[in-house]
Length: 209
Image (cartoon, rainbow, N blue to C red; front, side, top):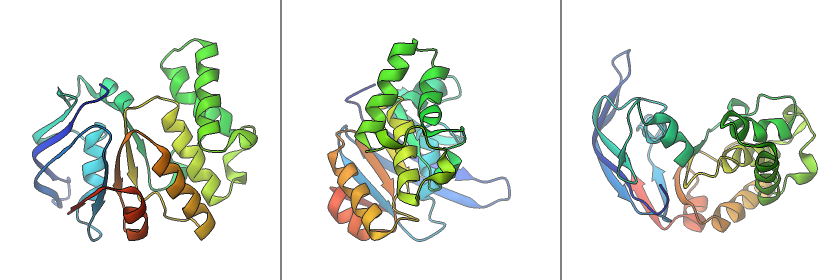
C-alpha cells in the first residue's frame, strides 16, 4: 500500500453513550506528507485516528488507504499499513522486555526468526534504543517509553504513522529528541497534538477539528 493516499469521505461516528465524536469529516493526505490534527479536547482527533487503522469500525462514511476501503475484512492488512502510536506508551508496552515488545508484532505475522531479529534491531537502532533492548519497560524514562512504543510500530514496517499526542509526558530533552526523530521519517505522518511547537517543526499542514 505504499505511495498511496489516505482518503476520508463524510465520516460520522457516535459512541454507544450517544456522544457524537465525528460529524461529516472529509480529508485527503498524500503519501509522505506530515499532517497535524489540532483542536480542543473532545473534537474527535483520537476517534479519527482509531478509524484510520481499523480500530474503530466505519459505521457511516468511507475511509480508503491506498484505494483499499477500511472494513472488517481488510482490517488486518490496514493495520500493517497504518501503524498507530497511542498517547500512553504503557498501552503498547506489555512484555517483560523492550526487545520482546518490539518483536511481538513481527512474530504474530509469523515471519522467520532472522527477519524478526532484523526488524527489531533496525527499529531499535532507528529510535536510539539498542542499548535498552533487554530492559523491562517499567524501568524506562517517559522519553524512552515513547521511543520504544514507536519502535514497536516501526518493526511492522508500516507506510503510515498515526500518532496521538506523541509529546505528552516528555521533558524538554525528550521532546526535542522526539521532534528530531519524527523529522527524520519519510513515512506519511498524521499527528494529533496540542503541541504547536512540534507542529511547526514537523508538519507541513494543519487540519483543525
